Image (cartoon, rainbow, N blue to C red; front, top):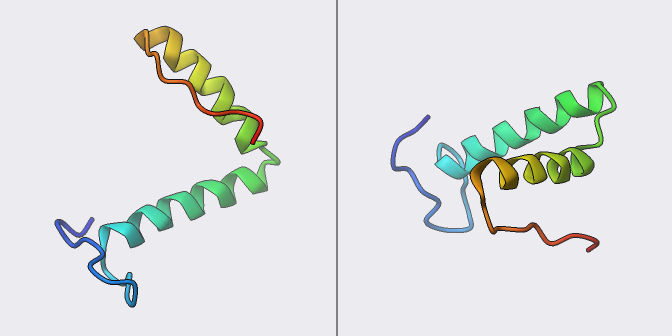
Length: 64
C-alpha cells in the first residue's frame, strides 16, 4: 500500500490510499457476487456478532 498518499483533489485518485481502498472493496464485492452472497445481510449479521463480542454500542443504521 502506498504510504501517506492521500487524495488531495478530486481530479486524480491514482496511487492514493483511497484508490487502494476502492480496489479492496471492488474485489471483495466481486468475490461475493461470484458466490451469490448477500453482502448487506452479512454486514448486518457480522455487526451483531461484533457488537456482542466487543460490547460495542455502535449500531449500523438499518432499513435505509
